[in-house]
Length: 238
Image (cartoon, rainbow, N blue to C red; front, side, top):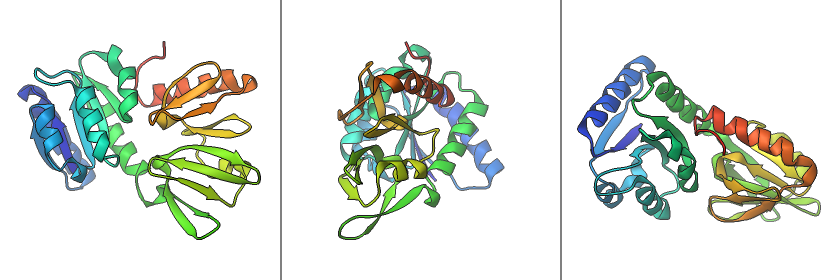
């Protein structure tokens, strides 16, 4: 596993390296670490080779959110875990598809759980197989933003492109894990992982696309999203 640490304070770099080395020995896996002291150098590096990028929220010469935005323009595959001494900024990191938010000083148990969850979530079992009109395709579950009913078929909207598959929305819903996806409307299933914000009628995703929330599902959606935020240590919903 290739890991990047982007933090301008050596003390936090060292703490994270020590924890990652402990995790490496405990799980008996290879972890290769590279450190950057500012966002610019991290952006200039071939950052798409990293499985995980640990990003400090506030650095002396660069902002973690802006750095992550630049990375996301060319790299949608690496997961980003924000680390910060300011837990109140956790929700701001949603717009750059943050996998986890960890407060400084880092809780080792939460760090290890975040890596465990990454390894579990992004393994080969996270692919779904669908048939379209022309071919059979494999879609990475983490790349699904939302699914939309289209008569007896379903449009799967992903980070890269949209696919019309030969299943109705109810059948697709049964294939998706309920802790990560939610049926918020008769015509829409949302990926909670990609939700940037929501109102009482709409869900806005991290690619700025929009799905609708039905009035009857609003309370349940809010509860599901709250539980997702809590599970992923991304702070409280205001």
